[in-house]
Each structure stands twice: as C-alpha cells, then as structure tokens.
Length: 321
Length: 308
Image (cartoon, rainbow over all chains, first blue to last red):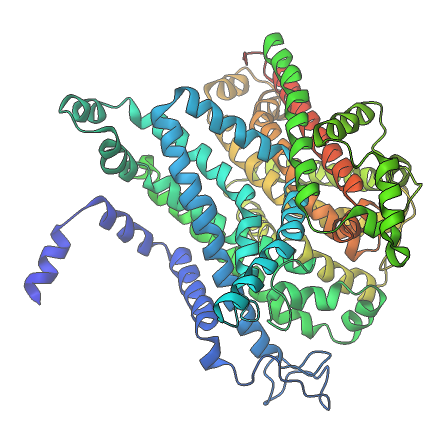
C-alpha cells in the first residue's frame, strides 16, 4: 500500500498534474460533485423515484410540496420529483448521444483529417461547415427533427413488424436517434474548427518532424502524436458543449419535437407550464413552484458545466503551468 | 481588405444557392404531400392531379428548383400550401417586421448593458464590484431564454404588475421590454465577460501607462485609449451572439404571445408548409451572412491595422 502511494506521488504524467490542479479548485470540485449527484440521480431514476412517472393522482392535482410529493404535483397529479428524476435521465442520454456522435466523433475526426492532410479535403470540409453554420441553427434543428421523425418512426415500425422486436418506439429510443441526428449540424463544426486549428499549430512542431523522419505512418502520427497533444482544448470544449446540448434538447422538447410524452423531459415539464398561452399565466400565478424544480435543475446543469469548463480552461492553459 | 469583402460577396450567393437546394430537397423527402395538405378533406385523385399540373409539380425537379430560385430573386417565394392563394411574401412581411423590431430592441439591450458593465467592472478590479459582476454573468450565462422568461413574468408581471404578461404594441410600447430583455440577457452575459477580459488586457499595455504619464485625464485615457481597443474582440463575438439570439427569439415570441415569425415558423414546419419554411430559412441565412459582413467591416473601422 505504502509503496503504491509513494509511486503515485512521484509520478507526474501530464494527466495527473492536470487532475491534481483541477482538484485544488474548490468551485470545480463543487460543480463536479453537483453534476455527479444530478447525473447519478438521473441514471438511477428507476430506483430513486417514489412513483411511476405516468401515475396520475387526480385527487391531488397542482398540490404544493408535501411529505408524499417532495416537489408537489402537476396539473394531472403526477409527482414532480419523479418526473424531474426521469427528465434528468432523458437529458443524460441525449447529451451523451448528441455529444458523442456530433462533436466528438464527427468533429474531432474531421478536424484531425482537415488539419493534418490539408489541401482539397480541408477546403471541402471547411466549405461544408460554412454551409451548415449559415443556417439559422434553431430553425435547422427544428426542420431536421420535424422532417426526420416521421421517416425514422416509419422505419422503426417496419423493423418492429418484420423482426417481432417490440418497444423500439415506446421505449423512447427513436426519440434519442432523432434528437441525435438533429443536433449533428449544430455541434460538429465548432469542434472541427477547434481541432483543425490545434492540429495546424502542432503539425509543424519538431517532434512531429522527427516522427516523420523516423518513418512513422501518417495515421500513427495523427493518433499517437498529434491527438494526445490537443486533448486539452477538446475536453474543455466538450465540457461547455454538454451544457449547450442540454439546453438544446430542452428547446426541442419545448417545441414538441424532442422526447415524446408520456416519457418526461425537463423541456416538456417547462413548456407544460409556460407554453400553454393564457392557461399558463394562471399556473405561473398560482403554482410557480411547479416550475421551480425543473428550472433549477436545468440551470444547475448548465451552470456547473460552464464553471467546470472555466476551471479546465485554466488548468489546461500552458501559461498557468 | 477590399478583395476579402469582394470574395465574401461573391461567395454569398453560392452559399445561398446551396442552402436553398438543401431545404428544397428536405421539402421533397419530408413527409406529407403539399397537395394533400391544401385540399384537406376535399381530396380526390382528380383534383390533386389538376393542382399538380397547374402548379408545375409534375415537371422535372431541377426545373421546379430553378423556377423557384428565379422567382425568389424577384422577392416572390411562391404560394403557401396551408393558406392557398396567399403569397408567402405577403404572409411573412408583417410578421417579419414585428420580429425584426423585437430583435433590434434585444440587440440594443445587449450592447447597452453588456459593454458598459464589462468595461466598468474591469476598471474597478480589486473592489467588490468586479467579482460580483463576474458572478452575475456566470449565473445569467447559464440561463437560457426559456428559464428567464417565466422568471421575469412571475416577478415583473404577476408580482409587481409593472408590465402586461403578453401582447405586442410596436417598438415604443412597454410590452416590448420584457421579451427584449429575455432575448438580450444571454448576450449581455457573453458581452460583459468578453469586454471585461479585453479591457483588462488593454489596461496592462504600455501605451495606457504612457497616456496616463502624459497627464491625460482618466476620462480621455479610459475612452480614447482603453475602450476603443477593448472593443475589437467584442465586435467579433457580437456577430456570433446575434446568430445565437435568433433561436431564443423564436421561443420568446411563443411565450410572450408576440405576433412575429416564431409561431408562424413553427406552425409551418408542422403543417409542412415548405414554401414558407424555405423563405424563412433563406431570409434567416441572408440576415446572418449580412450581419457577419457588417461585423467584419466594423472590425476594420475600429482597428485600421487589420488587413485581410
């Protein structure tokens, strides 16, 4: 044990130095803890929630917080605490699906290719990015979600009929696929441009030149030598991205294009109260606490990711080393 | 510089052509048949065929596309599917005017609040003002419009009763204030942060010290030497924030019941009214591109050293 501890102190790989620095920042640690709690409660929603999320209690609708219902009930008498937990689960899944497909896989790999190989392929990818970024992004996301959803649902229904697997649509899996696709154009270009810029600045350094001189293949240089050196900015940008994707999922749900009811999502919970015209005014007036729980959770999610991103920027900044 | 702007201006129509093509294709492969939408319950094979023929929907696709582009150049975006015999441009015009006014008001709020706030908090570094402004921007930055709107409504409309909850009365009506603030707040947070950072950057420069050593008053140093230089990065960010604010505006219009393009855009997306969607997307893209072009030109005015 002791021996192990000793070797840990002595080893100073860049990764460990970064982690140590990060753990010294109180705000960063606090936000990581909050994020862990939020994401954990979302992931384990099925164990933690006191009621099923569809259970309605028509006797106790629009009730304030009580022992039975921590955050009260909504207009159908559904337990808000339960729905917030399941809503977080939706956000967890969507943010990771959106981030993994869009900005991490597509953005990073295209950025690496574009920055390292340059020339025609670089020009092509950049023009493609310019086109996607010239669209008003929310309009494009809504348009994509609206046109894609029926196609994908049809496709899934087809699969269900042919293979006999059921529950593809009812489980909400389709919703995640639709949202993932709709978020693609928004997320990849920013990451790609960042990675490209980093690669361009790394590509001319001497260690790359020496690797080339040793006859290392291009792909290997890209993966083994370039990629680890640009990891810092990627992590920072992904951190900020997680907050942004969470916000976008809520916008989609707000417009009825995200996760479909009865499955709860934080966006649906907010638009249930604010998006119903004059009916929402009376709810806002008489039962503002219905909005409180989802709003605070969403705000905390975005706020903590941003704080963490700020801290990571400091930590990865070579000038602060 | 001249060549740079020229290149941008030449590239713009090509970009718009590609964008319109993408939306056009999405319209073709999207669900729903426009003729069905238009006929509704009166649908019959015969009638549908007659309308298709009259509208040229039986022509080859590329002819349909080029006809559309040709008309769009003249400001004619075709007829709406949902409201037959109404021109898209007529439908959109009054709504666009409302949205543009609201958006302009939000940009004013963003600039008028964000830049001074960032500037003064940087000048007051070391006092309590600076950290509290930083904390405030962090809190506000994490608040998307769909969170700000209900909070503002509860506080200022329902509790204090200062403003009506919803409605629209033009640019000089107090009902514009809450929605404009809602759209503007995320931008305020961004601008304040950038302005603060860049002001701090400039303050550390030699030429600021020289200016003070020359005996210039604080006022002159702060405005002529510091503020002007600090504004340069802010202008770039402003271009991006404006793009980001567009989406927020859509939601805010829905929440505050403003008769702008927000509700209309959403309705047309759901009813597959593709002429309207295409027109909106093209108009949105043009305004984004023009906004960025203006930002670039401002850039050169602020900093004559910049050459492209």
